[in-house]
Image (cartoon, rainbow, N blue to C red):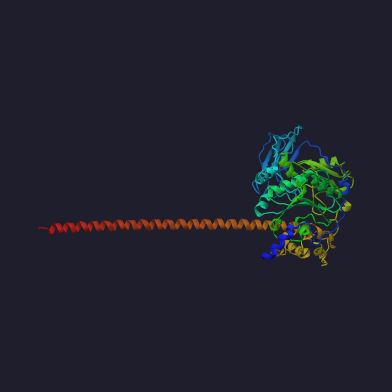
Length: 521
Ligand code: SF4
Ligand code: SF4
């Protein structure tokens, strides 16, 4: 970016929230939140067995650090990652490990993953906790280290490790922190419930995050209609006496809760394709992540539970539940009065970005913000798919400014280079194009599949590059060995030649001396 443009962008990023902007596309959707949000938060009971997935952050599974028969206390490490900051998985309660087994893990792939099976002992006894009392005087590096070791990931659904993100943010330089509370997908109300019921933890988490990355000020972005949450947060900010934290209300348009869309709304700036908010000096965190940070630092408690919205027309008493990670979803539905007779589908997440679950034996994960139970009336996949009529509605609705009809053609034809060039990787899988398509083409599903193929291709390319580099390094090593050997032989030959020359010289000298003696009278 040329210097002058960069300066303007920097200024606008620093004025985030002063003026609101619009992003391209998006949809105004019915909220369906009041039904779950109107009931106070409840704690879900501990089940007879917890299935704690080892895939608890984006990327690969953690390696288990416990075996069958081990007893653990609540908050003790039971798995450790070897990538993205090397975070941990912790025991959500005290009890006995009965095994590490393959189990369905509530993942979009529908595949199984390894889970630590923990039988609670009923005491729910924490390990020895070590709170950081005076966090305002603590070295920011120590705060980031605590967050990294507390198993905190982005609780908005991405499960990107927060400790790693903060480390990168610090390295790249951040001036403004944005806490995302604009929970825009219909039915999901876990963040709104959190903002209403635990606003002080959110504000405390914001202040700790500010110190951890060296950023001020902080914006807590919430939707316009979240009146109770706004009052609660503003009161908490007053109580904390911190004028660097403020609440900004945004107009509810789906998918405003997407990181890039929210930044566009608050600053009018676009995060560049393939770029990150830190390119603009911004760091985005979910409000629930801020609460987890506050607990980890001031109470010493790692992330072992989360709020889950259990809702939809297929469940009797929708509400928000605080559930231990690893709790089977059946336990949550039971707590909400069970299924209605016409319940037809279980979805993890919202109706736009969620994915169907094969069974309610799947456990709660750190990404599980919502369990949605739909009836046959709400299902869209029984509508017959028809050919594209090129109406362009999908492009008008796309918040990433893509051309979904064209992308769809490329993905269907396995034209991966074309799909990549057309911006498939920028698709945020929001489902807006799906919803407006008069031909009922499941576009977002195609794009999910296409993106996974692009990732595989990138991985294959990476592996091929590594193999080529290894081959070239081996060739270079062998060439070097060949040259060194040649050099050694040449040196030896030269030395031998020198020896022979010396011997000849000596022989000549001896001969000269002998002849001289003979001619001496
Ligand atoms: S799913 Fe992707 S292509 Fe479709 S509207 Fe959303 S961002 Fe655009
Ligand atoms: S909305 Fe559907 S029918 Fe219209 S252009 Fe897009 S893919 Fe084609």
